Length: 352
Image (cartoon, rainbow, N blue to C red; front, side, top):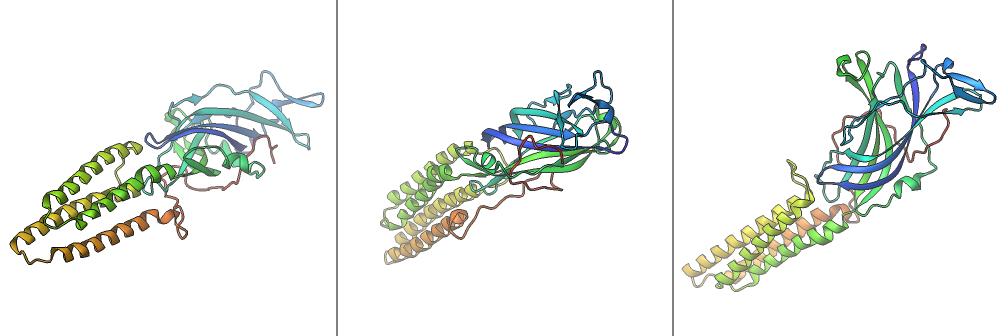
């Protein structure tokens, strides 16, 4: 199964056919992807039948390009003999190829710190289940002819920005059951880069949160001596904010850090709390000193409050303002070097 003059060089191509969905809560996505592998096999594998090359039968020298999926949710492994075909270059040399189609869920750890203005990497990772890097190495073939096919996949809340290959050498022990002897294996990943379309989150969540903060500023416009009215507004808005937060928490998984949207929610809670404290202090000071100029203090508080709300709004919406742009988060991944950028990838290109 291994060529005598070195590792088998497998030229790999991929076509992203469709993305059914991207689940942020479960951090998985379902995609339909086609993979092809081309390689030159052992010379004894082929036999010339007229003008066509064929495989000998039976053939013990044929290279077995078996694949183990690395991040699929079903933990499915493909060890069965694949369907082989032949391709003939202009030189007349035969080339073996394998075609595989996957349509299933894949795990995709996401960095949601910039949510809802985040960009995510969706990898489809696999490795050979029988060969290490001394027996098999992947090479990736570029093609620019179907860029529109890849980047115009219709998704309601995501936009496909890019698709490229990544690879990394990965050490597997011989007793792990993957390779026939100890050594480094090659992980290969087809990585789809997608950018969230934040329209739904902005119109249904973010706008509501800022409207609630603006409404809470109306506390400073109420008469200072109307403690019951002012405090009732603050408490009602606070309870509404808590109920609203429970609703939007279903949009995200349980993560150990705060997202951009979470920070706005925290500011909303703090603003309502400070408005309640200011209401109590104003009422107490006014009772102690009837000459206390509570209206002037309310005016200054209102100016500071709305200026703070405006600052938070500018910070939150900066990515979509004319001078802002989406930031690509640094996503932890086990395939993070030797990256080869590709504008598009296509099937059916003969081995070069």
